[in-house]
Length: 354
Figure (spheres, rainbow, N blue to C red):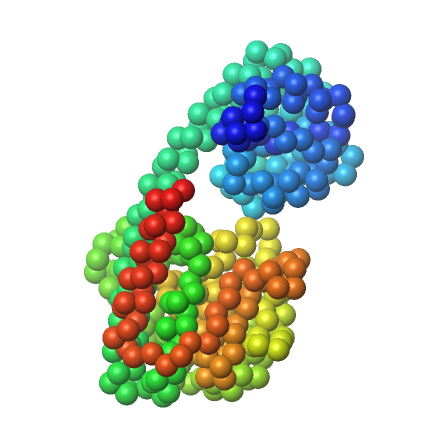
């Protein structure tokens, strides 16, 4: 089978501390699946981090020295909840395996030694289930993404109109900050929509409009009381973690570098792309969090100082920015809608090119 053919196969990660079991699994299933193997839960998580986009099934043995299979699959569920998880176990562990299936949302257990035909059927059904869930999640994500775009457009229009009316402090800085943000929003925000659109889906237009009025009032109140001195905004953002208001982040460093401000964060067992809404929540969260308000003010202070804001994970390389917002030249309020429309066109073009 060519490399090109194998790339199109569904991916399966198999974790077992026994070398023979890993070799046998790969030999048995590598014609129907793109098989990855790991000798421990720790190594399995590393492979998932690198290859998660192409993996749909995760199979783990229960009895491993460093991390039990149920503990490994529990971590997989927290970080990659879309992956279908299967546990292999000896008959002597059957009771705990059944409990794990019920409590840990594991798709199924398979007793050892495997019956090859039975195992093949389990994998086939698990992959079918993954396909059904993926299609459902894709449709829901499209709805949420569309609603998020509506929210972003409405909030940008509202903030731009307040700035143009001069009814708030530093109106030009507000417009320039929005322009800086909109020009560099990552596509990951569109692919991982925040919760802002849920009100319309669940409760209808009236509740959605109430939500948006509350969100606008929160944003404008925070802006009106802000100090746009860069050092003060850096301290305020770092203070969100110390005050316990940075959830789901568990660690955040805010430091200057030559061209601006570098943020590095660590989050509790979640994929970084799911955190875009937490930083950029002024544009899309149902209730903009203290973290998102502090981040928005930091971008404003950096824009005023002609500096870049760069965000990355704690374990990323020095210049590997997960999100980068360079200072934007002065913008007019009527330019913001055009910038946003251009951004949506770029995202849609990227989607069509997949």
